[in-house]
Image (cartoon, rainbow, N blue to C red; front, side, top):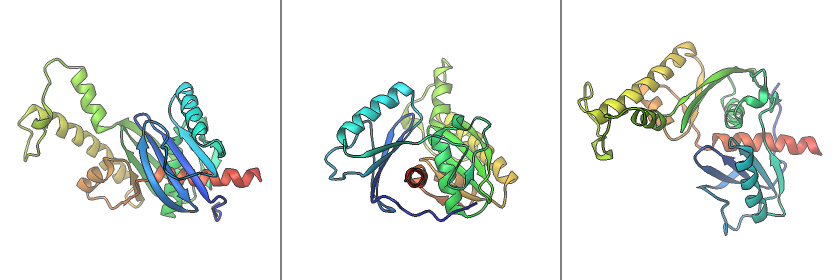
Length: 249
């Protein structure tokens, strides 16, 4: 099912519009030149992309506004909007309605499959924690979404009247938590660690490819061998976008 994927464009800008930030990744051939997180299109970078690969989990209205801003900055670039599909780059989507799988998850799954070359668990630990499982044959088996660590803490604080603490109170300690700050932060950590530990028990021989700001810390606590790739979604977008370009020729 796998095919040899070759670069078909020289300069590509991948735009990954997440729920809380926008990540811009500039490619020249297969090399990443720079990565930038911002709320708007980066300017004065000296980078003029041939093509823009756009992946967004935001609303149609928000995505359209962002699209207009970026295309105004790079009017000569050819635009490709990436969405989740039933199959791409040798990977088969598990969802009955493929487009309902978040495009960030879809692109991460594709990139992880091509990096692992075998059975793989994909973890993206950011605003939300997303876990997907892919067989070595490229069949996506499904996955999970849970709140991220920050979201868990924020929801707990917003729904209670007396659970309060200052940031300076969040300090490391040993044994059972002996302060509200430790009780909340360490309690949320334990919930996530228990979830990931169960996944590891179910798929003990799978390689783990991880991304997202919290993934390394969480998995190191579980002593799970992993490959950390901070640009996993962008790498998946590059694979899918290049495949679409080849298909249009």
